[in-house]
Length: 435
Ligand code: SF4
Image (cartoon, rainbow, N blue to C red; front, side, top):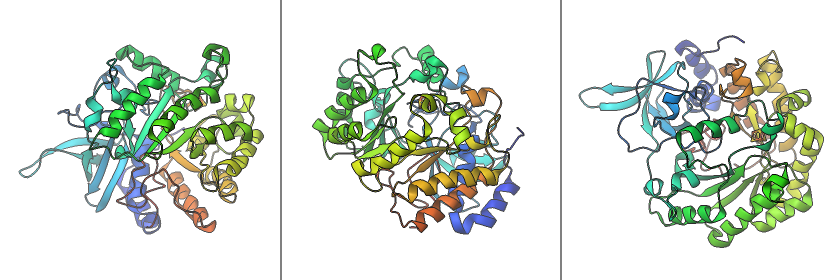
């Protein structure tokens, strides 16, 4: 599988070769995301938003010393030798990442975090701020931050209301996913970490966020694991379960935030129910485009719904939600993971670009997140290292080339676009817009 760690020379090469087209901010962000970050010591001082482990672990390493200490949810990198505009990056802990956060001690800067690549200074660092609502509790003592964490520098409220996925019970989980393992790990250190959240708790937590003067949230995502066994859910099918939350949230906060719903691929009659309940943007994640890989990497989705049905339902969803409001996600980089993946970077990009173009040609805007090979996922456990930077740079180029070709708008619900503006923290596609 090979070690694909970056060094400064490689990074400089990609920025020199492609930086005018996709900008250095997006390139460096992808490089940090794919490899994660290490810290030379546990961050001191509590005035930053700690990782909330809202759905997956999003850490390469999930050892006890990592999970039981506070690390920032996100960092923003700025200035430095590449003269970076402020760039928000999700924190994924990887003890052996070549990217390390250290604290600078100088006459002017006392204990200021900065990011280094193999010991070379790359940029100054700011940690995501702890907002007033993050330290509050609802009436039954549960933490707002646990019920309704905010990510993307405060732009997005992330409501994972079922933090397990029933595909795991049948050994059919997506191979890159560590959701149920993250749940087990979180329970070891936090007895309040619940698998299923209650509608009333969510409403109360959202009321606190709504009232907070320092809230900058503009959208929420309602999501959770797949439900395939309704007997264990008191007769609720997946769609019933999520619609109960959606209806209550929209009834109370209609128009306050853009609603985005991540559930499985459904036929039109069920999608109309979602739309009527208040869903504005429909995410039904496709994960990986190639036919053979979809079957191997997403065995549950493949068995219970099937690739062709999943594709057709995404296409049909445009009739329900409208142009540009159907946004399936790809987990970029898993196409290169062993033992199933492509051997060549160009084949991987070509395959995913085929899927991106197929959807974009139908006024669907697929997006992607940069794959984090968590050691608590199947692919991480089997020793996979991240996909190379070259893959991510080529994918950024291709995504934007196709986005221009089909004359599509910036997707709604993702915050601002462009270097120095983007809040979306788990891939560089929003940073790479030229605005
Ligand atoms: S459907 Fe796949 S990616 Fe989503 S939670 Fe289940 S196993 Fe994870």
